[in-house]
Amino acid sequence: MMPFLYLPLWFFKARVLGKKIPLQSVVFISDKCNLKCLHCTIYAKKDAIVKTFSEIQSDLEYCHQQGSRFVDLEGGEPTLWRDGEHGLNDIIRLAKRIGFYSVTVTTNAARPFAGLEADSIWVSMDGVGAAHDAIRGEGTFDRLVQHIAGCGRSRVSVNMVVNALNHPSVDETIQFAKDHPTIESIAINLHTPFPGTEALELDEITRNKVLGKVIAYKKKGYPIMNSVAGLKLMQERDFKKYCWMANFVMPDGSRLPECQGREAGLCGRCGFCMAGEMASVMGMKLETLLAGLKLRVTG
Image 1 (cartoon, rainbow, N blue to C red):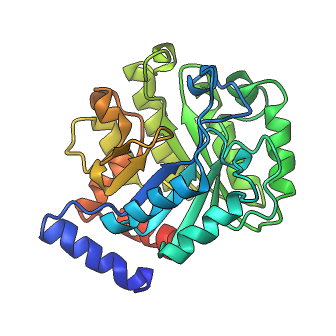
Image 2 (tube, rainbow, N blue to C red; image 1 turned 90 degrees about the vertical axis):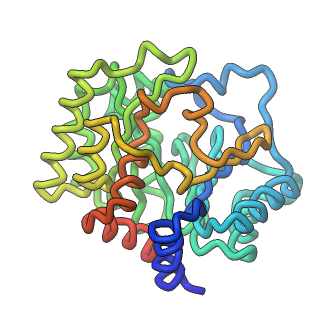
Image 3 (cartoon, rainbow, N blue to C red; image 1 turned 60 degrees about the vertical axis):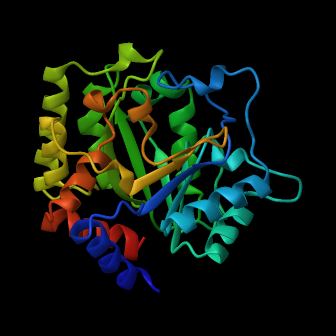
């Protein structure tokens, strides 16, 4: 069954029949990383977890059996992953053989990613120039720009996580994404204060100001992936969550029916704007539905 047939069927089962079937899966293949980002505590681990090819196959088969048909491979830094003769492209091909319609890779772009066979690639970009470097390390922005230019793809997307340090650079980051010939869209998220990173959380006034600014850019036609409806829900905060639409398989192999923020008790302080998008889908907001179709059917 192709995506354009699967998606309406999934929506009917979820919206009308009330079945909690994941639409997408986020599979962490490793927590090994090549950066020490301020918002992250993974790099501080003494021994990085690197899953075997067999373990990842089991994870992917499990997610597919749950009903998911779209998968995002994450880390750590996924492009570092190897298991003997197997590299990241082998995982991508495996996911396609299992039956996933599309495979996404999220990378920090600190190393080249040319030749990656993923259907879509998301690059983590937390500002322009010094703003990005302040979060991810000196020189990381220049490498990101270099590796996007040399990736050999006509389209990549970027994701910005806005926090207490980089929020002044939201305007120039959105403008950079609009002007860059290879960047198709930008997704905006807000910092979620997992233990050890609370100082990066936006205060309420700044949070709403940032979201309002993103809404204004979206209405002006800037290539922002978030929908206006989803962003407005993130301003409200108090809305019904449908985060079971994405299940998660963590680096240690634990399988979560939804975002790890629930286990951490952070739903009320959530910055993952996909929560707003999911609620807008279930609320049948046309803009969000069309954006979701574009993302899932055309990649």
